[in-house]
Image (tube, rainbow, N blue to C red; front, side):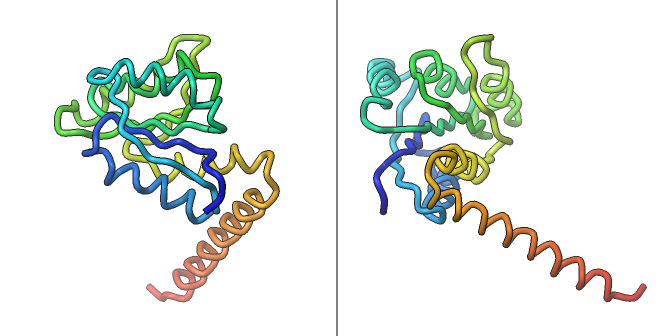
Length: 166
């Protein structure tokens, strides 16, 4: 795998089944990544160290997933100069995921967090690859191919549907 340039963090290891989709997409695009658990509430010192130093380690984008109060993405964004992609997670203690969505989405001016859909880690991985791909032709080429393939799949489905008689 290539050099690690994307960091995927989550508030708990119970978030891994959702966040794995981001890792899978980054692997597909050949983008190096790391995975870790960083809790905004249970390990604040680790959160501060991680947020302030990720860019010094060569990280270019951070994907942060969190459920419930979902402070992780916003807290990282408050201390890091990197683009942060927040993944709201429907957790066992959430209010159908809305608390997580709103906690990540409603950031104050000056502290942006790009937010994907509830449990939308796949799109977070694609978005992170697109950010990296803006400056890395090899990654951008794989994204172009991926999107072309999505179009081909839709055309095939269209032909199948159009040939059915009612």
